Every structure is written in C-alpha cells, then in structure tokens.
Image (cartoon, rainbow, N blue to C red; front, side, top):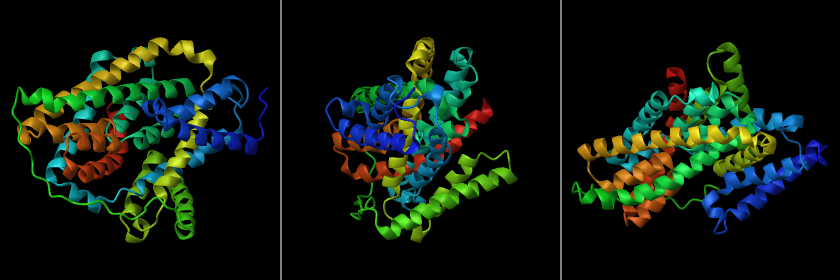
Length: 377
C-alpha cells in the first residue's frame, strides 16, 4: 500500500520531483540525461518503493493528467509556432529542413520493412513508428502527441524505454553531425550558402504576466473542449490532431503571439505528465523489455541513419553546405537547442536564428508526419 494516495499529496510530490529533476539536469551528469528522463527516473524510484501509486494501483489523478493536462501542454508549446517568422530562416534552410523531415519519414518506413519490428513489438510497433517519426521531425511535442492519442503513455516501461532509446540516438547523432563537415570536405568540397543575418528579439517571451496567464488558461481549456467536440462529430479525426491544429492556427494571431509564458507553462505541464509516466514504470516489468529494447534501438538507429545518408546526398546535390546540412539534420533529430549548439561550434552565427525557426517548423509538421506513417503502416 502506498503511503500517499490522496490526490493533493501525490500532486505535491510530483511537483517536488519536477523541481528536483530540473536542478539535477543542471549538473555535469544530469546534462547528459535531460530533465525529461530524470523526472521519469525519480518518480519510477518512488513508485517502485511504494511511496506513490504505480500502474498496478493507479489513482484518478494520473488519469486526469493524461486526459487533460498532457494535450493542453502540447497546445501551449505550439503557441510558439509563428509560421510568418519561419520565412526569415531563408529558402536554403527551409528546403533542407523539409528534405530532412521527408528523409526521416522514409527512414522510418525503410527500417520498418527491413527489420520487421512488429514481430517483437507487436501492435505497439506501429505506434512507436509514428512517435519516432514525430520526434525525429519536430521533437518531444510530436512524440507525446501521438503517444497520447493511443494511450501509449500508460505502458510506462515501454514508454520510458522508447524515450531512453531516443536519448541515446540523439546523443550519438550529435557526434555524427559534428563530424559531417570535416569528413565530407575531404571527399566532396562544399560551398558556403550566404544567409541574411538577423537578430533574435529580446522580448522576454517566457515571463508570465497576469494578463497572459488568464488568457492562456482559458485558451487551453477552450481548445481542449473544442477538440473533444470535433472528435464526437468526426470520430475518425484524432482529438490530439485537432488541438494541435488549433494551437498552430491561434499562434498566427497577433493577440495570441503577444501572450508571454506559453512555452514555460507548456513545458511545466509536460514535466508533470512525464512524472506520471515514471510512476507507471514498475520494476517487475523491466525484464520484459530486454529484447524489446534491442529491437527499439536497432529500429531507431537504422531510421536515423537512412535519414542522414539521404539528406547528405540530396542536400549535397542542391546546396552542398555541409555545416548547414549538419545543423538542419540536428534540428530534425535533436531539436532546435542542439542545432544551435552546432551552429555555434561551426562558428556559423548567422545560422543560429534560422536553426530556431526551422525547429518551430518541425513542431508544426511532426505530428502530421507521425500520423501519416501510422496510416501507411
């Protein structure tokens, strides 16, 4: 019996673990794992010690976080996708990023048909293929959006294992993309593409005011109920796809674009969602993941490798700027943050803002491509 079953007490513990994970992620070792994985590990430890409820003795609070907070968190994160600003990234970055998104999708499909992971993963394999397509296009927003639609988050161990594999592949791909320009210049001489220099806005977009908070809370709840209403009228339309679309459309409105703190609020709710994922990770089920873990690692590795090879070939034929191609690939696989790190490492400061902007484009595209893969498979 868990020492904590009262929903308020459990919520307090989850909030405390998010704080602890955030600080732990700032340490030398924690930086390699990230806040998302650390908060999962922390809650998994407490759940397996019986201090908070786990999957086998779940409480309504967990269901509420899965049902309401998770999709609303994705909605908030998408409010930062301003499509009109993406054009500032310039045609080369946008074209390469779209190519990268396409090669990600092709990579997932090729890896699926070559490795046949469904023989080990079963029906969950198709969902995982869609999740990986999303995350290797736009990041964890899309990963969680697809997971939520199929209640994949309730499979705590498998969900956490998929995140762990994703983190391993992302880390390895950082090393690969760092070496791409050096390795390829000796084989195929590149040419630097000129990009118009631009500066980042200094507005504190993550600082929440009362005005922004009251509107964000209302918009999040309204968007959720609107998406649920659409799913009732059109049962074949996934509600998460509706709330994703609503978020992207609202992000284009000047009034919504001026609201500050949507990203901060969304990220915090995502961490609470991931904390519940950790609580679902029961150690008794870990042994079942061994063969599955290897299958996941091979599947994701082959998919990303195909993405990289195709992007290098196609990108080389069109632009042949190896720095830019490496940065775009990293924006696909690792997200905007690691893409910025690459731009700074290559001393291509003019590509920092474009890297951020194409990263937001990935947020917009990832969920759709993920569902496309699910439809194909």
